[in-house]
Length: 116
Image 1: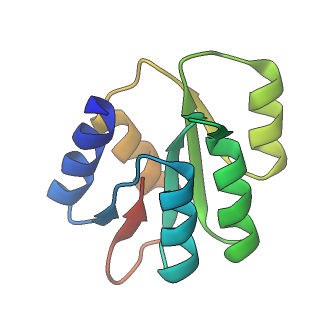
Image 2: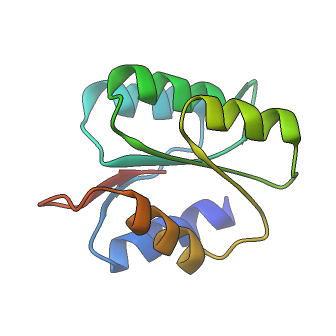
């Protein structure tokens, strides 16, 4: 939860509109009801995982920037992320590094919007 809060703060300070969700269900609902430039998600989301949420995002908006981060360098998860054109990164990674990576991958939107 501390990483989620730090990420949200970092992205907001950079001018992005952020919807911070701590569960798969909340993230899925936000993706279905709002438009985002991208999704930044942890692999661990309770009973589901962040890759499943990234698939939902990809289905809703094929051009969305997707970044999935994990505490483990799992080759299977990495391959699954690459299959859906998501960037897979391994913790530890700072909020500033994730912001830089996201901004490098995201389109230059007129109004910055992100979901984490």
